[in-house]
Length: 505
Ligand code: HEC
Ligand code: HEC
Image (cartoon, rainbow, N blue to C red; front, side):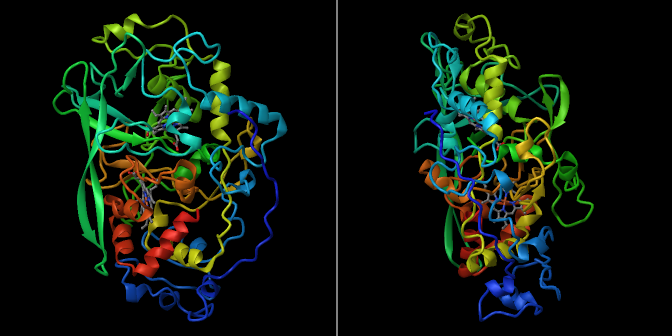
């Protein structure tokens, strides 16, 4: 399991910039003509998408939300390697497990040590360096949920979840929400010998039919979480639930290397520019020192950094205590849980640091078809529909002195790392630090096209309800409603191009 994966430092052939108009083929306009005709924007009626024009330089596009337009009109050399020098020139089922292509050999051992701890199944006791599971837990290994470094998926009907979890909160009499006094803030689906599990949830789906503007029908599935075998009584009235699938692990160190000021610059909490897209940062505690930091990780940006994310997963999902979280989480009514607590912490600072290190350095795979005409056409449509207002194409990372491989890289994650109100249909209703019940962090889109290859399943959005990129897009509401409408107004051919572009990332 911990054997070294092949790495490739093979350079990608130098690529010449390709103008969108050229990519659109012979039937389309020459550089300098307006692109509205080239991309059939008007005929397919991207409502409210704003004017689309190619300047005399052939490089500017403005769309709904405007963002990233100019870089979306043309192929930008470098975007075929979305992780900069960390990119690995392979695209296969192991793509979310490989070390960054530029990881120094001095750092490789640390990565492999972290990967071993990520992959191994933890036990109740007796196994040196991997015991301390429970008393209650959801999974026995990180990779049990993040299979091959990929994302989770919902279970089949009436089955327990295996790669996702349910957080819960109850209304506080003082206003706001608190952890449930009997179940804590996350349902623990399993217990070690002699300790009762808390219960489990399955997911029921209700079909939600709809149709694109061209009358092509579609059917979305709206989820409901159904509790089973709750061991300590029913959920309190007003309890709010948030079901979340495990997120993919690629490129996370690069996201942590984006400068705070570059993210702040994109935030527009009061929508001062009046484009309908606001975007704000979550502020969350850094439990090691009690400071409040901007959130970066998790579906609601509820974690400030990858070390805390790892420590929280160890304790919250596996019952493994660490220097950051030295106490097991046994709510007062759960005497069996409390009685089974062993003294001491389960994972020490060094091994926790190895997992944190590993989490920084999973490579982003390259994009072999980044210059395909249909992909570039989809890229322009993505900009015109306003997707890039939140799914920001690129950043240049700042320096992290201890992790030089991540610094000064031009990266293409397609996220702004900000929270956006996504409307009532996507809302889980559960606040998470400063994120409200309908706010989610813009999901990075890089690597999304590899989902099925890596895990065998392709389910998208925070609770895995979407069975395709199209469904994920159709669930967008709130600030993303105009973008959703622009997408739904496209012709079948244009929807296919936009989707192909997203899957090429
Ligand atoms: C029970 C399933 C499960 C297990 C086990 C699990 N995770 Fe996760 N992981 C999740 C879920 C669900 C999320 C999203 C959490 C959220 O939004 O609050 C997540 C999020 C993350 C993220 C944030 C990714 C991002 O894009 O922001 C990292 C990093 C991570 N997990 C690492 C780990 C590590 C390291 C371990 C082992 C110590 C682990 N996980 C164990 C389910 C799991
Ligand atoms: C207002 C901001 C915003 C806009 C505009 C927007 N998105 Fe999103 N997108 C998000 C957020 C936030 C999520 C995460 C939602 C969730 O998990 O429930 C997301 C998730 C996704 C996902 C699923 C990613 C995953 O990892 O599961 C896809 C695919 C996607 N968006 C595509 C698009 C496309 C295509 C467009 C344009 C038609 C678009 N988005 C416009 C904010 C936005």
